[in-house]
Length: 353
Image (cartoon, rainbow, N blue to C red; front, side, top):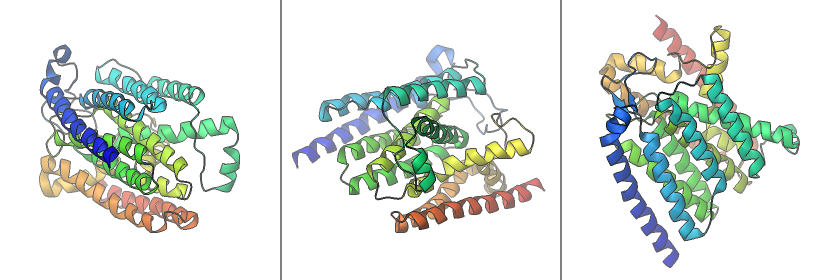
């Protein structure tokens, strides 16, 4: 009982601290280095704001997260090295772009790969199980295991950055994903890890207050990489801690992040475009085109985020019914691919005309 009170007090105080961090940074981000963090690019494919807005959500997020690390250590005497190491490094990669330090997409990707390999070989972390027998056998090979971890991680991180184009789209999606992960861990008795994920949800909710429905602050690349890497680690560790759950259940809840970037990569190759350069043909862009015809661009911005995440939730929640059944989970995952492709192709034809 006393332990529960300490944890509840910790989370309550942290919620207030996080709120004020985002409040201060959202209010004064335009003063940092004469507005260097302001997003004033109104011509990029996913630009829908009409006034300069600070890309300082990642900065507020990393400050809040490191405060959380300190308090978490004081309560549980645990240092989560994998999180401390990776999230701060991924934040730096994105923050360089937020500071308008020009780094090509290929060099940014190379930096991520270097940091991920450093993590893999300095801290023993890997994916222990995937419900495909021959892959499980290959996971016993250290080289394949490292490459598989790298592949999954990069797709999730870049998926987070890819869908971070509308007010609340990414943050709401990550809140849903992490809420599901915290529920799974809570039911399995992994209380300390559940508290850690709840801390991340608190940070995302604090950001959402200043980003939705009208944006006063953006996550920026630093925030997308930070929270994308957090969510990827949360999912991998939850999968490892809960072997009674099908690994495809976790693939299902990460489906939108993963498949959006996977599909985009091959779509651009087929269209003879560079797979690492942005365009306006992503699913959330196509839905926005249709929604903005009804609600206008300003309202369409946040209504698009609500609709996409509502549909995502409707498709993900049934997975709880068969979360511990590898075969049905696998079929549902591949069904989601078909559903995604049908919706995308239909929207593509409608918006093309």
